[in-house]
Length: 480
Image (cartoon, rainbow, N blue to C red; front, top):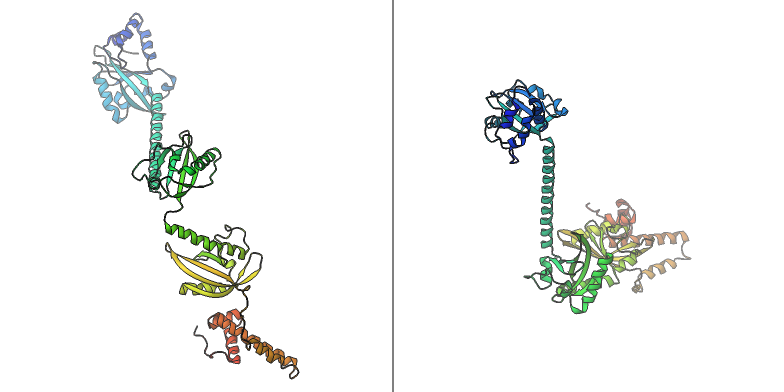
């Protein structure tokens, strides 16, 4: 270093940050030359700055070649405070003012070509008004570690916040769930958590189930079944539900699921009451009756997508699995294409009920069955539901017809044999069949001539002409 008495620096009374006396450490250097002592001083730090009494940098020495290429030598001849950021000028002033007192380390940031250079300085009075010598340590490695530590801490805080939010949501769902849920240790079978619905079901609405053996909640006759079920779930992830009777509650359907948490295995147990009151028993009985009903029954939504069916409808539609029908449109099986189902749904939506509507059911194999449909509409949760009861009429025993109805017309036709030509008999037969079909279509559509014409495949004008020819009804066309 130039212009600095190293031995005066060695005698300066400073107190380093590690509480050891700097003069005691430098005392062995008194036997060295000034050049050797200067080299020893530079070797003990990363950067040494000599500042005159006016705060101007008179000399700079660096300990590494990497720092020598950063333009630090440009500090010479300029105020030392100009080499740092504006917010660090106060620290430079403190270093210059406190050099003659017990020294304190100050960290400042120098802007360099490659970025920021954080340096931790200790100012030492050079003596005899010769300014100060500031020895500094490169803190970039420490700053990098601090940044990594800060990022790790922020990441941990984010993870902790996310876990707290997940726990809050889990707790809210767990406590507000209407289904009784109990969590037990898969090894000890002791209860770790139970939601309010489970406490109410087991008769401990105001108490706690934590720490109790789950088997104690079950009636004696079902304990072996529960122990076997829980063991099977813990061993093979088996989820077959079992019917159990609680010691202080009703019969329930018990199902368990294995999960892992905190390096331990736990079982999530769900309890579904089977007999809560007489109404639930009646509803179950009603469902059993519908399932065994000989007439087919199907429940759909407002768009006629199938929601539920009974066994008779599966037989009628020739479907082996109930699940295959869910979500399928009823129009795939019920009604003649483009005719029956539209009329049936229109009447159902207008009146809410339909009785004895004649149509057909098309099975999956193409076979058709004539059926009578009775339907009703209900509203559940703001959504429309349609229930259809289908009775097969093709297998019904024919009702005796009055003796002098249809056979009379046939007899009249056969009596014409020998009196008129065959051509005229065929024409009379055609007229009779045409009249009967028109009457059946009008009856089928409740005298709706537009629908009757559509069923018969005629235009309205053709239907009106035939009505006039056969003398059926008035001759005034429909208003629509």
